[in-house]
Amino acid sequence: MKYSELIYALKNLINYEPKQIELCRILDIKPTAMSARVQRNSDFGIDEIEKIEKKYNIKINSSDGFITLRYFPKNINYCNDNEFKIEGECIEYKLPENIFPYGSFNNVYSMCRVKMYDMKPLINYDDFVILESNSEMEIKNGELYIFCYENQIYLKRLCKNINQIVVLSENPDFTTQYIEKNQIEKLKLIGRVICHGRICESYLESIN
Image (cartoon, rainbow, N blue to C red; front, side, top):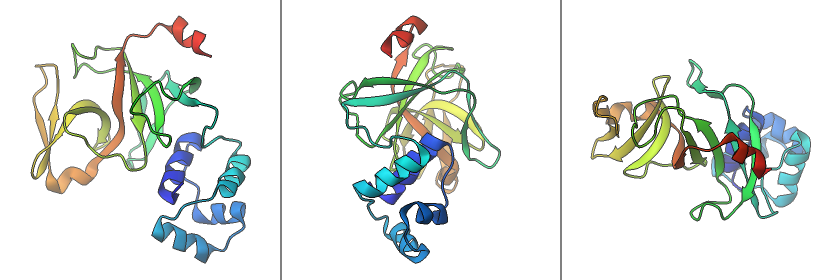
């Protein structure tokens, strides 16, 4: 697992990004060695991953044939400094890792309810959406994304243009928007929508 993938996984699992010096203490390596790894985006060995997992009491990689789906009953928000934040409790469900045929071992799967009308009637208010995300996530033309732009959360269909991102809604009450090239860096992808609809709470309870 590369450094960028490790940091992304830790941010999702422990809700903050460990500083390099903290990882140095866990792995018993010098700061200069860690700095070199960061610059090269080097891989971390299995034994190193195990040390980190033990320190934080987490499981970064799954080897039991299951993936973890993290359900957030509350709304998702961004802090004012554009640092991603999810409020409230997180309920974890174990699902077969082949449930998403295009899934990846390094992907993080999250589920939340939609509190927006932008994509109606495709996705209605209070529907569930399941997101996949990873450290190297990029926009795929015509796919649905939950993202942040200037500290606001959106659920839209994104398309790449030559010098801009086209932001599309299903709901005709919402006009097409454009993010120009010099503003694209303000767009922060939270996850790509891979599944959406209505899910009964009793079904969720039966998964575990």
